[in-house]
Length: 96
Image (cartoon, rainbow, N blue to C red):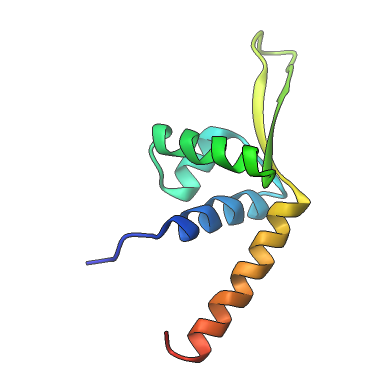
C-alpha cells in the first residue's frame, strides 16, 4: 500500500506536470496528471497563484465561444522545482 503524498509533494507533482507539458497546461489535463480531484486541484491552484508559482491565463479560441483557461508555471515555480529536487537528493543521500 502506498503512502499519502505530503503537501510539498503535491505541489511538486502539480508543478512538474506543468513543466512536462512545456510550461502550460489546461486545468483538466493537470487534474489527471497530478491525480487530484477537481476541488483539491482548485484549492492548490488558488494557493500557487497567490504565492506566484503559477498564473492562470484565459484566451479566446475561435471554435469555442467561452474562454479557455491555461495554467502557466512562473520563474518562481521553476525555482521551487529546482530547490525541491536538491532537497530530495540531499535527503536521499542520507537515507532519510
